[in-house]
Image (cartoon, rainbow, N blue to C red; front, side, top):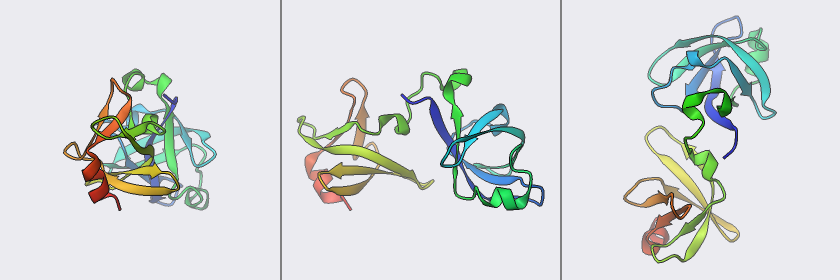
Length: 166
């Protein structure tokens, strides 16, 4: 389990003072609980000054190091992270980001590949499974593929895997 947890993505600037619009990756969590965050590819430490909900999964966030629209613009399409050890409710939960690298197996234990990435499209999550030199995208739906906690792997019927991979 990694300590930094990706909680959202900066999608654009919001206003003229350097605030940003952030899409949250967390269900039922208000961004106002977060104080210290890490942003961007280099995971630069920053503090949230103010977080205001915009709609179901978006927030307008004012961050101390983003003091102008020009600076905020440089962080567009970059992720926001928290250190999960600072927040009790995230310490023991397992997220997809924690499972990167686990094997994908058939129902009879045959290794089909390795889980290497995922993308959350809102309506569904797509898993990327690497099989040798080729990667495939599989929808993360219980009827198709499940994570087995006791075996620490994803399990999918081999025929479904062959039929669904894109």
